[in-house]
Every structure is written in structure tokens, then in C-alpha cells.
Image: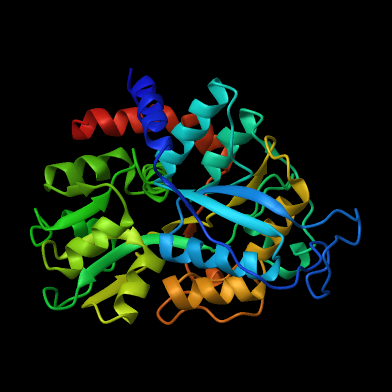
Length: 352
């Protein structure tokens, strides 16, 4: 019944939640981004026409990416629909059921979601020329999707309210953290769903940890943004959140600090993939390549505190490099197969 509700809800959302942006500059080669031109070197097809991206990325970021892409390729028009990962997927599945898919690319938070999309024949493989320039740990071996910004879930805290920084996930079960911690909802947020599945598999944590959070009166909000707002305002002293959200808010002056807990951090990379529904493959491929380019990777780092997937680039201040943190990464296919059951278990535990 919950799945049916999600589908119906997504259909109602469809009409009013589309955003777009345009621009005017010379087009560039999708297969060689260092060369100007209106056609791809390999196929001779123009990078032009409309493409639609469904995403859970921050609105300020994806709107700027679309504007930059449309400026680079003036005959193209990249547009986007943005919501939480779970609502994005519900929208896609609702459109698939009615044979009305409108999406060319999908960019949401976690690999298990993309395994679900693969299983539903919604993605097609693509060998990006940017492969040699990026860390491939977050790239699907079959190239159906590519990580764009490696991220980690950890603990954010209000520096005005907390004198001793937490070091462990278990610190959120303390008396000091009781009714004083906020987390994103795994039923809405893809990063939160991934964190749920990784932390319940982590040694010394498991489902007992989530029961402990519930017993310690953790507050649950929809997404990472709600966590940041709550902790920055002092409504809660602690939060479970994505590192980029916390670091970007701290850089803008919020009284926040971020911790990578010693037990390890659930790692995701905001994957992007091209759908089987696209009727503008050349431009969709150009957009995927553009997401991996130095310009967009720099934008993500400077605008929203994202760690670049591209080799040789600096990380945001306060961010640990991928190789310097303990990453909790389970095979995406394993998490995909367990995802719905574990979300249902969370729903029952927390009364949703």
C-alpha cells in the first residue's frame, strides 16, 4: 500500500515541479571536451535539443550546472526536476508504468538506487572519455552509472552547544544526545537509506544501534538540509548528515563542525546515468561528461562543499580524502536486494 501511495503521490507532483535554464555560447565536442565544435567527433551528431535530468542534487548546484552546460552548448537546453531520491524514483516508476518516461539522465545519491534502475531496464551503459580522469571506485563496472562527488555520512554538531566533539556513532546514544539529535529519513533521503543499510551491517552497531537512536528520542526530518537547519539553529546539538552539507554550512558561517566517526562512514557518490528512454543520446552523453569535467567538479566543491571525483583536485576544507577515512561500502547489488525490506523494518521501528 505504501508503494502505491508513493506512485500516486509522485504523479501528483509531476505537473508543477520542473525547472529549466538556458544559455548561449559555442558548442563543444562530447567525446573530446577540450575541442570546440557543434558535433561529436565520433558520431557527427550535434549536441543540441532538450534533455531532462531527474535529480536529488541541491537546487543551487544543479541549476548552475544546467546554465553552464547550456552556455557551453547553445543549441542544447538542459532542464531538471528535483526532489528527494525516493520521490525521484517514485516519479520515474510512475512514468514507466504509464509509458510516459520524460527523463534523459538520472542523478541521485546512492548506488543501490541505480542497481534498482538497472534491474528495471531504465539505464544504458556508456563509456565516458572521462574515465581515465576520475576515481573509478565509484563507477559501475559495466558503466551504467558514474559517481560524481564522493560523500560520507557522519556526525555534525553545534559548536555553541557541544564542548567535546563526538568521535563515535555510539556517542549519539549518550544522555547528552537524548532528545538532542536529528537525522534524515531513509524513506525520503537516498543518503540516509544508504547509511541505514551500512550502519546496520557495521560491527558493533547493527539494528540495535537504530533501536538505540529511537529510544534516545532522535528527531527524524526529511533530508540532509533539514538536519543542517535544525543543528545550526540550536534546535538539536547533534545530527547525522552528509559531510558536504555540514562543511558547506560551516564555511558559510554556521556554528557547525563535522566528525567522521571512528567505526567508519557510509560512503556514496551521487551517481549519474543515462536512461533507456532518452531520444537525445548524444546530448545526454555530453551532459554526463560535463558533470565529470573540472569546471563542474570545481563548482561542486566551492558551491556546496562536495569532494571531487576527479583525480588531482583539492578537497573542501575539513573534508577527509577518500583514502584517509574508513569507508563503509557494501556491494551495491547486495544493498539493492535488501533495500525495501530494511526500509520497511525502519518504518515499523520508527512508526512511519
